Length: 147
Image 1 (cartoon, rainbow, N blue to C red):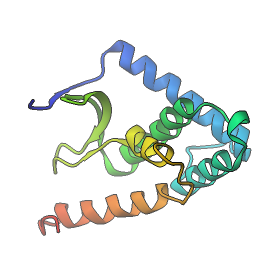
Image 2 (tube, rainbow, N blue to C red):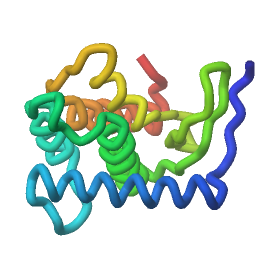
Image 3 (cartoon, rainbow, N blue to C red):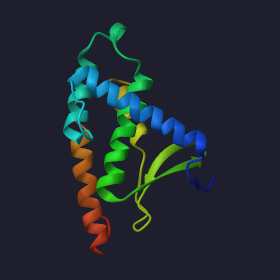
Image 4 (cartoon, helix red, strand yellow):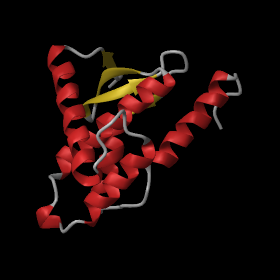
C-alpha cells in the first residue's frame, strides 16, 4: 500500500492539543517544569523519571508516548520547520512530521513507544534523536544527500 498523507482534520488537531497538554502536565508532574517549551534534554529527564517509577504506580504508557511524543514533535516542528501530517499505510494511521523541502519524515509518538515496548529502555533518546535530525537536515539541505 502506498502511504497516504493528509493534513490534520479538526479531530486530529484537537487530539494533538490534548496530547500536548498531557505532555506538559507530565513534565510538570515529574520535573516541575512549567515555563516555555520543553527541550529534548527535559523530555529525556521526564521519561527517565517516569521509567524509574514502580510499574504499578506509573502514569499509563499510552499517555507518556502520546504526550512526550507530541511535545517532541512540536519541538521538531518549531526548530526545523516540519509540518504535522497524518500518514496512513499498511500498518495503520499515525501522526507524523514532514519536512516538505527534503521529504524527511519523523514519527515522534512511535519513537517513544519503541522505548516502552516490547521492553522498557530508559536510556536518553530525545536529545540524540534531535541531534541526529539536525545533522541529517544539515546534510540534505546542503545538497550532500543522505549517508
